[in-house]
Image (cartoon, rainbow over all chains, first blue to last red; front, side, top):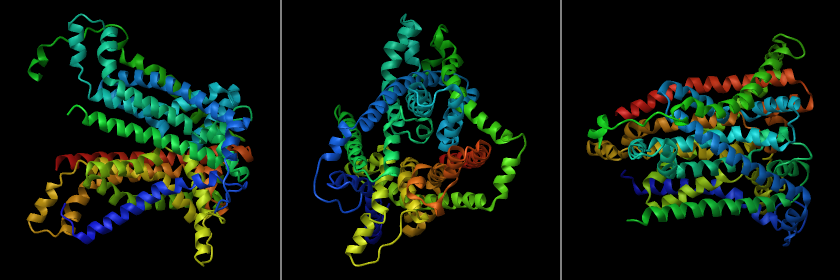
Length: 265
Length: 288
């Protein structure tokens, strides 16, 4: 599109502001995490590693972190298996029932968090699942399922079913054809679903706040209660660690993907 | 290849792959147990506690304070959606117009906040907006009076819009990516000024993306809980917080449930209204 130079400059400036607005606010946790005082007031005073030390040594923080890793790992595995199976089923169904079931399976994405949270809390109170690993895993799996379904369905859509036919005509059973032909081709979709499921569970906060108890907390719950309770800069240290880990994972992943795509040419 | 299609034998139907419905069953059972049953419980409780009837709904729509909160929830969500559309439109357009390297940077700026935990992002806004926060410290250092940002509606809108912006940019980008820019050149070669070409050609073609993003943002904003809880105050309470108070603090499952059902029904009505509009817009965009 031909643009006047002035329009171009204004567009660039607006986008720069939007980009800063998107990224810069998160960076504020970095200086706060090295604060010497137990305060989140700006500007931070002095320099100290004590909040990082606190994160790694304080049992409240460490156990909630390990709980989150444990729950998210189980959820990622479970949601990926269930979501992949469902995506296959929908792919091989007639269009009308498939669309209906797909919409049903995507509802966890649009149900307001608090409504779902009080519902699950009510059921868990009766079933004695509040504050249990099973309770967290079940709730997070259902929230992660839509992401797996979307990712796997997308790669099934571009998968050429005739390849399975070819494998079958060469004498492969349905399972062998699936294992040696279909699975390797849709693996990127399954893996991105796995990653989405892990991240969904690791970040989930609203339902977790309701089904948590003092014996089982996840990291977001611990962060939330720390923010509402006092101005402990340990949250800033945790935020910095999570920010760094996310940037490395996403940035590295995108660079790798970009290089791979360029590679063969 | 396609000429061969009619003669290729179909996959022999055997084993678990031949029963597609069975494959979806585990997911459906979990869905029924962890979404269906809990939502049903809430609907039943809203109608049965303390006794059977619609008294909880009468209470909700009869108390002015509830209606104020309901109205505020809509107003805040509308503001968040407007801010998101205004900020996302030029950004998504630039993503389609720049070279691959600059695009990577722009995409990363959207994806990194998208993947960073929402609680951490809200924490950042607490640090920025609080009375002893970054913005007020800078204002004071520059000799201005400090302003109240945290526990205000403005603060809630700023924080929510930043958290939800990626949900607006990504669908908008995917639609804009598909727009043929030669149409703009054609319009200009026929004598349209750039602004006229934009408003008569580009803008209508990009509207499906705007609708899709706006609906997602508005619906997510309606149910937002964490950001208003941490950035808001009594004068910016949204419906979700009210639901939580009724259930956890007052143990009023009936009243909390009724509010939850109102929120749920509103969400689904909006989705149902938006779905046909979006679908027909997509079809129109495809036909042109």
